[in-house]
Length: 302
Image (cartoon, rainbow, N blue to C red; front, top):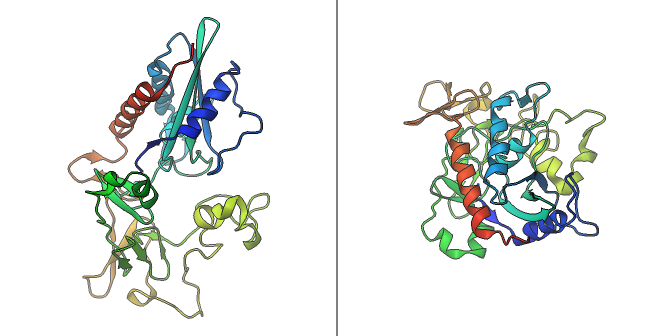
């Protein structure tokens, strides 16, 4: 997702930095209108932000992206938050506290424990109702705020597994049993607490977190996608209701329909012409962009 500097997040980060407390927390009686946001902290002699960003990034060596697992006794949370794929807004603040500088960065949406940090897929194939520019998704909301961004953005979405494309909305309507913006993923739940107690035990939980449980975490349980259930009527069927194992999609050109490995995808890291999609160069590019944002946007308060 294309990243934007958010002045409200910057303001909230500055308010917390002004407290000169090196601990996670949030300004009193101040909320962010879009919802919960994540927070990274750095304190040290470098006021530029580069050292703090690099220290957060270096945590990548302790994190297994596929297993969503951090090595025992190691810290990974800063890296996960700064590289969280769905975070589209960023704002930072800094304050001189004695002989050191406290840097606070806020991210929206925040990272969520138990979910994958980002989705391995073809660029721009997993962003809902979004256009594509420079292999980054650009939402309609971003286009409204800055129309120039979308002058050269296009809808290059390809619907898999008999999905139907609405070119105007850049949206796929998926066949039963399939889900995701390009219909390449199975209709299933994406959080280990779906159907669990404590957690999200039933459909009554679907409206929690401003319907995030229904929209993101427990899509099958909340029927945000249409699963294939025996002895029920299909609304939109593909290949007579055939579904594939995770990481595979239907080969509509074979007779009868078969399954083929999707690359890049959940079970294949190969990105055509670029090697592995898990290569850290993607995150290295991100940290450079983040650094430029930080240096160009920050108003240092000494």
